[in-house]
Image (cartoon, rainbow, N blue to C red):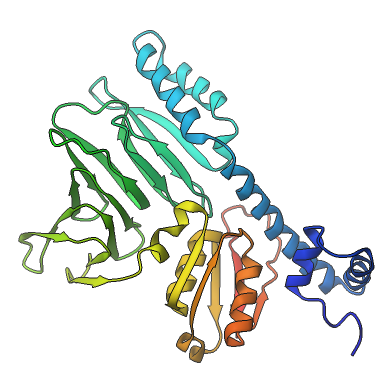
Length: 340
C-alpha cells in the first residue's frame, strides 16, 4: 500500500487543525499536490473546517447581552430618534453578532416596536425577551416579538425552530404562533418547537412544565391538547392528523448547546438534525443504510468527525460532492454529501 493511501477526510481535518506531526503534515501536502482532485478535496475540507471555527468563535460572543443593550436603548429613545437612523445604529452595535443573525426593527400602525430576529442557515442565536424569558433560535429560523409586552398576553411569532425557557407569570399568558393553524400557550415552562413554513409537520417537544396546543382537526373544528414532559406532539398541517410519543428529548434540543446527541437515533432522523446543524444536504445512495441507528454525543462543530462515526459504527462511506463554480448567487450553495 502506498503510504499516501491512508489520507482521507478525517486526516485532512486533523491537518488543518494542526494536529499532525511534521512528518505526517509533509505526507499530506505531497498528497494534496498529486492531482487537481486532491486539491479540490482539500479545499472542500478546509471550507468545512473554517466554517466550524466560525461557529466556535460565535459561541464565545455574548450576543444576548449586546441585543438586550440595544433593545433598552431603543425603548428609551424611540420617541427622540427616527427609526431609520436608529436602525443604522443597531447594525453598528451588533456588527459581530450579525455574523450569525440578522436583526431589524419594524413598525405597524401602533407605536409599539418589534424585533425580528433571523438566523442564517447553519447558525444558532439566543435572545432574551422583554419579560426575562430566553429563546434559542435554530438554523434558518425567524422570531418576531415586541420591544415590550403589553396587556395580559406575551405574544411571539415563530417561523422555524426555537427552544423556549419561559419566565413564569400567571397574569400574562405566553403565546407562540406559527405560519400554520396551530398555537402554543404556556405560563412557565421549557419546550422546543419546530415549525418551518416549508415543512408540513409542526413538532412541539416538552422538557418541563405544561404546554397547551390549539389546532384545527380534519373537520376544521378547533381542538386543544396538553402534552407532558418528555413528550413530542406532531401536527400534520396538510392531513390535520396528530401524533404524540415519548422520546429522548436531548436528541431534539441539544442543538441549542452546540451539541449533536444521538440515542439509538435512526439514520433518517440523524440526517435531519445534521442538515440543520451544518446547512448540508445528504444524498443516500443505498436505501439499506436507513436500517442503521446511532448513539453518541458530539460537542465538536466538525461534521467530518460525525461522518467518521457513521463510517466506523455502520460502515457508511461518505463523499463530499464537488460543486461547480457559478456567478449566479441564487444557486443553492449547500454542502452536499453522498452516503453509500
